Image (tube, rainbow, N blue to C red; front, side, top):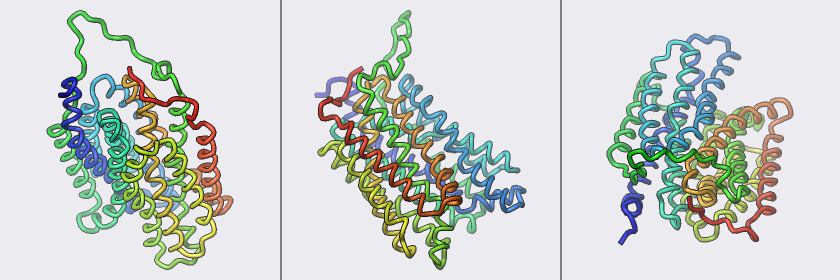
Length: 411
């Protein structure tokens, strides 16, 4: 027998909730990234004519969503702790469906940037899904479950640009946004009708609301949490730092069909992460999440060194694929470590901070990579990223919990 109705719901429905979360995270990430191949064309369609301005506005429009998402992720995590995680997923899916449809109605570049900001503000389905899966999955299966969810997120990052490459010529740019909004609305319906969550505790009549909890004050061991926030930022920084330089880097290698090869290089990391995330997450459930994160960081750092000295495009594709295998195990393990290191009452907020850290990496990665590549040469981007990841792995080795118990806390 189960101990409580909440435990019964967790035991019975966690796999269904996981399936809905994977589908929802996949569709929303696709919607956020599908405009990458045609974003400059849409910016030009909205009245921007100078080539330099088109590039600049394209970068602003793309980064706007991640900037607003980074700022609001902790807020949605806190509200999820108070009012329920399912409610936050319903809000995010409906908000994204509306925002994506409105982007298809933009009439000028300012409206496009504003609506991309709105999409990040109202969205956050993937981060909310991570919180729900981390808090409602049985602890002994959390690594595997978070790995499956991470695979869905990485698959969205992989499929988004591919879908954005072939849909606009078939149905038009604006209709592509409308279709994306419609698909996310299906996610909203699935979340609303299929997902089950244990009811939130209700207060008796006249009972005072419990005082608000300061998350850092109730975490007895802050080292694992702070370390994982840094690692989460660094993972996305490493993935995204190559984005603005890849086409130029391949051109320097005298690559034919530069655009095609650039797409393959960008997709290789995400594809490998899709394949490895659930497997490494399952391994981490047995071998320990901290150890797996440390090994994955070191492995990714090693693969970055030869990327700076490749002589043809296929070498870079292969190395990015191998790097993606290591990176695929990081995000689910990071979420699991944070979840096990904090009380239930602040789990949503701390996982929200983790998501914000990832978004910060997604913003800083392209900016830093583009600046260093343009001013100091492309190989330096890989070398600097390697040093950062190796340094982070060394810091984790130094801070490893050999003499400190990092156990799940209770509220």
